[in-house]
Image (tube, rainbow, N blue to C red; front, top):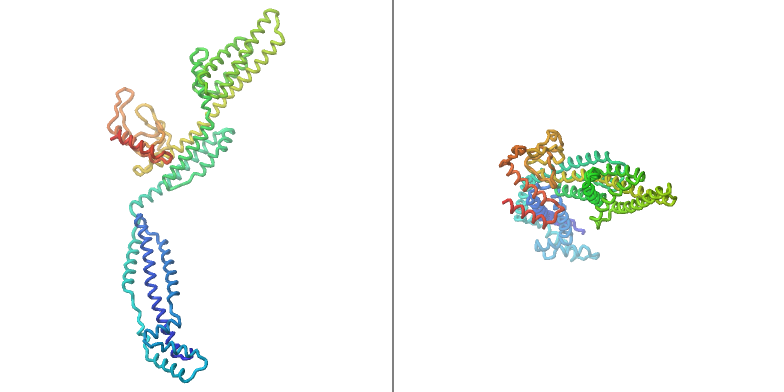
Length: 513
């Protein structure tokens, strides 16, 4: 382009037109940006939340890309600017023709006169006539959207959300305290474990699971992890349970207690003093072959044991098998000893064959009696281990109780306090429970499995020792509240099927109308 006037005019028009496009696209992009911001702001407000300003950057980025793409597509170049000039100023392709002629290498007088005419025509044109039409509706709409976004962004969290945040914070604090209490109790109980119990506990991976307990601000998540831990403890307890053996020993205890001679042994057995019973059997084992009377006494006990096993036909207890074997061995021993007594009375000595039979039967008796004694000792050690596991299992139950009752009157139950509730008048605990980490919530009884005599009672009851104790009205009302809280506690559990929850809720609603 050799003519400077034409070139300068085209460039000026192109700059002005592109500037108009920039202004126009900024307005349209602002509509997209502010529209996106409004949608995001409304999504927060409808949830009762304060608008998170960080999310408002998303529509700004989208709006920027929209502006950039639109400008690239719509911007004017030299060719489109020339067409616009000819059209807008009604030049009838004068500028386009002059541009075309200037590119011709061999020009004549006609070409020169045409370029000169275009140059003179452009000199009379006023570039300011190219006016930017302001899209007023779009601007007003943008201002309205901006004012709405600014207003919504200034709103604070709703009361519901504030309360939920407060509860979440409180739940997190309680969760941390409960986890700390559980870990502390785990360490205390673990220090009491024997080497065998430590191995069993480590094998079960319960220790690692307790250490992995999460501090959470979600009440349901907290309840879920404690309920899961409770179930895991129950699985380990069931695995180490000696239920079949204990049932057999309970039957034997009933048989023993019917006879005066074996009453004390039966009483110890019924009280699950298995170690003491094992010691008694060891004593009998040491003197069982001293004379026939001792063997007969042991045979009498064994027959009672065997008689008890007949009531447990389906049982596959190892002790049952040992008792049957012991009875057979004692029968052989008695038969051999009676035979030996006859031989001694007749010839003054016992034959080698009979002595061998006596010794063999005696060894069998001792071996079987030793196995039975070991079963009792094993049962005793398993019970002690299960008792310790049950303490930790109860901690999980108490943890759920704490989480369920913490939202009543802004407090939560001190499930971990260890009161010494007395039987007369209902539940007066000692003052020592006040020193516990947790504080007892008044009028709340949301225990899932119940803990009798734990903590200080706020109820008043007439003296029960006189036989005329009558519960006051407040006691009656508090019982109704207790039912209500228990139903709530049950319904909120994640491990209870929905059908069962609905049935329980309907039942308690009906009887407490």
